Length: 215
Image (cartoon, rainbow, N blue to C red):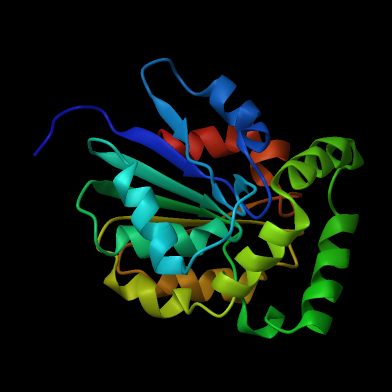
């Protein structure tokens, strides 16, 4: 087994790219290499394939292990699919993981999104919109359709490495009971809640996220 320090590999959330992780990347110690992998619907304006194909692309670009594999929001489902089958993954961090079955229908999703948006700092809006426009609404819609039905809660029991589930206390897209159930589903899972945070924790709470990545 490699004795090299674990690298951090990030898969950004729905419509997002490395700009949502700039605060985290700037705060990581120089001794911790980090990479952001863009995928269709997650920083790339390209047709979105099946979830297993997305996971396969991550595996092909993962590099040498050990790796701390990090997902945010919709990308958590891709990250867990990778961690199920790749021994290079030493730990998994899931920030605001989706998709709660109660939010797989549009009315519930919209209501939760509005409640969460109200809890987000408004200074983020230009940065988020710029990332969404770069990825494009077509790719974002396609990613949602591909990943939302995936049963991440059924995949997590097959992930043997430590899994940290992170949610902001104001995140209606990742309710407390949903996050708790995911942490319990992973054999070595734990739940961390960030007081006052909503869904965009990499942007709004970068120092807290860094602390979880390098602990």
